[in-house]
Length: 625
Image 1 (spheres, rainbow, N blue to C red):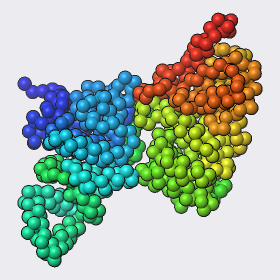
Image 2: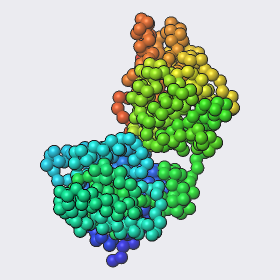
Image 3: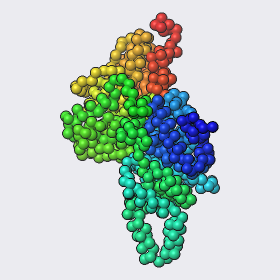
Image 4: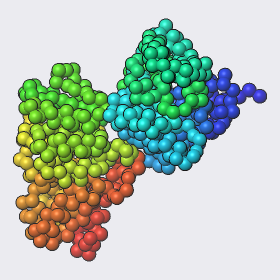
């Protein structure tokens, strides 16, 4: 009976064990089916598409040749791991990806035994895989460990720290560099693939190791043999950097050529010690729109799988675009302004700035630590650096923020995007901690924008402030305020009462101001846009404490050590006995889902604030409700 399924082979694969039972000549069809399934599913759900399309052959080859999950595959970040999820028993649930209660958009250890290491930040794979390889050696377990890392992720210092350490511990580790920026011409690709087969094969490696033994005692001959090998490789290969770090380097090879990929991986699997395979792939492979614009289809909303046309949902002006416009306007006023991003030009809104002021734009790669200290160096010489960075990524440069910027009280402005709950990307990308980790640093000024106009004014205020300052703003659109060309400086440490009420004062920060105002209307309470996380407006807090029975602080940051805690600290230090309820993110990592779902789950919407007030003084407030 002939199968009528659109996925005749994929329907038979519920685990990599099923994949390994197929004949090798069936693998190209598996690749085609995985790629087709990925396009059709993500076209309905949205998510990361182009990176996964580029790694389908690699994913199939790795799970076919290695005994996963006993052998470990460590994927960097997880953008490229949708095919991995498809082949590891989660195909039927892929349509739930990035939705509340559904699959994570990244790797997650609690989701599958095949997800050996969870990560949402890049450049961690080699370190984690090295730890697993050393652990296997210590425990006497024969196990292959493979780290897959992208060329962009290899710009991070952490990746090189791990590479530098691997030879020292002589780990049984294979690193696969998935290079999707380099193009391969047919002739060079063919020669490189041919040479990779030779250099990874038994004949060459036997001769190579044998010659080391025979010639090792004769230094001139040993040097000659080494130079011969280096010249041979140097004809078609990149520098010997990775071999100098102690890795046996093979590549670059075409990562979409299954016979070459399989034979090379098979040969490398038979070796031991640190090995490095450099493959070249095309981001968006197999889907013409994604091939043509892999940046747009890196993380994409639902689209037409036939035409690639993306469903555009009507939305207001995003905070990211508010920042991008402000940066260009400020740059026109001040030639000392320098814009810096750690590999997030599009995500952080610097495209227009990079085009209008290319000589003042610096993308430093996935190197957050360097970005911050680079900014510190610029500030030392009188320039005015603006570091555009996600809240979750600034965490990676915390020492530099303290040691290199704040201790020296340097004039660096931080534009912190994706503050608070980010929705579908989940806990690895949530800006859940910046109130806490910024507030405790001396010399730091921290602002939280409640709308688009305020965001622009706060950026202007931060830029004019002589010292370290940060403006944090959420992902997505604001409440719809029309942003003009003007910029107004806000007095440092001043809050704004936006509704006068009785007995209850709701002190809200950033995005939570809108819900606080709605709740205040229902409670006949006072609503305050606190604006500053540090310094807080202590004069206003003291005045309100004399006329209100209860404070409710509301922030999209963890309660522990957050902006609400600053209110508590001030009241305690001055002996005021006003009752305080702190609303914020709970003491757990909030899973992925839509932003409204997660905000409601955490009690930060109108209903959550009202219920918090009712729980404190239900009898006294009965007449209000």
